[in-house]
Amino acid sequence: MGIDLKRASDVGSSVMASTFRGWRGAMASRKVQQPEQLLELYDREGCAHCRFVREALTELNLDVRIVPVPLGGQRNLPALKRISGRDRVPFLYDPNKSAKIEGSDAIIAYLFNTYAGREGPKKLRATKFNVFKSRLATVIRGARGLEAKPSVGSQQDLTLYSFEASPYSRPVRERLCELELPYKLINIGKQQRADIGPSNFRLHFGEYKPIPNTKRSAFMNEHGNVQVPYLIDPNTQRDLFESADILRYLSTTYQVGGASR
Ligand SMILES: N[C@@H](CCC(=O)N[C@@H](CS)C(=O)NCC(=O)O)C(=O)O
Image (cartoon, rainbow, N blue to C red; front, side, top):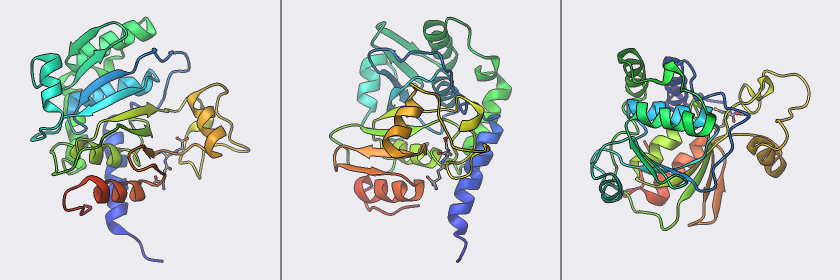
């Protein structure tokens, strides 16, 4: 059995990226309720400030529609300009409160105040040091998730189960961003000690039981385990586990030229 060095370095650099950010965006609240209408985030996966917002969304256990606006991308830029009057990310639209907010500090303050009734953590603020660490995370990932690749659009949004610090999910989010594919991001961060670890090697003895009546327990009931990334594509009626398979699928289906990196 040979070792796939390209894959090992992909997963390794993604682990490093999460480590630079102190594994923010791994743990999720047990309390916060998902609002009725989906929040919408204009986002660039490799953008240092967008990462803080996605970390906050995982920690608040909130789902969101991600509208990727990579550098050089033209598909979603008109929608961003229409809603915000500018071309800056991160930009949040909350249809529940008709709120439109630009910039990570303002968005995170809004999210924590509105959905948790408290201030956001200092570690998610855009201080020079935090921005530096978030940029390092992008650098170690070879600047993936920053620039658009030639792609064909999708009719309907895809759905991705993920959590921000998940090393296996990050490459998938990068690819979705580069291909300018909007998607529903369902965050299933860790809510208890038993959730910690990869799906096949949890740091927990005995049978794995997610907390009842959570997104994790619903996922467990449907699939018999909890594992991310998990992608659903209503355009082709495909659903996939395994990050390597998902990356291959996205490139083959949506990338012009179809080649995988
Ligand atoms: N071989 C899988 C590994 C996936 C995996 O282990 N994902 C972790 C998160 S990075 C997971 O699902 N952990 C279990 C959990 O969060 O409950 C892949 O490449 O997608």
